[in-house]
Amino acid sequence: MCRKEDIGSFGTSYWHTQHQIPSMYKCYKHDTMLEKAKYPVVDLKTGVLPHQVKKWCKLLQTEIPELGKWQNFLYSVQEKLMENSLPFIEIKNRITTALGMDNIANYQFKQHIDELTFKLENGLPRELLAYLYTDYARASNKGTPKVIGNLYRGINNPYKIRSPIHWILLGYWLFPDELTT
Image 1 (cartoon, rainbow, N blue to C red):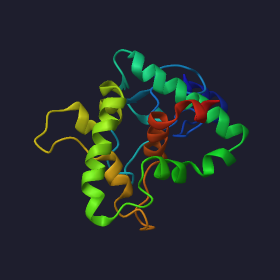
Image 2: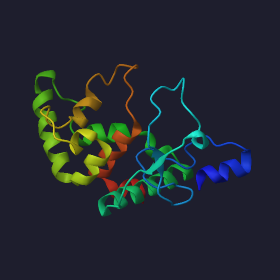
Image 3: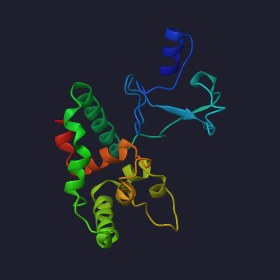
């Protein structure tokens, strides 16, 4: 539907966030299941526009209730951001304080991260973690990813910027009602 609308309006289609918000499985504008190229674009230099992709497959085969809750949460956050983004500016600092990361010593970092990771994994549905992080979706000898540790490791390095979805996920876990009301 998104591609057809773009071709009808502009004569071409393009990749854009009006329809596709990161970590969503439905189009924000049309409320339809998103599709991905069966053979994903690997190299942006040789990448194609959506109308040039030959084979598509749905992002999810079946909808999962826990992902539906995440989707609704993101819709609410998106609407709040469109109205007023000021309350979200301090979200990173609020999460840092809530996790106790603002005054953690280097020698305590690993143990604290392990404890927080355990709480995060028990506080969020496994289906959501598997959807957002492929390491939760497959068997691995590496163990589970350290989502919180990866966010805070090198946090002051300006070249190491993380996706806002990681921060929104932590907000969803720590204080979901405050972000949507």
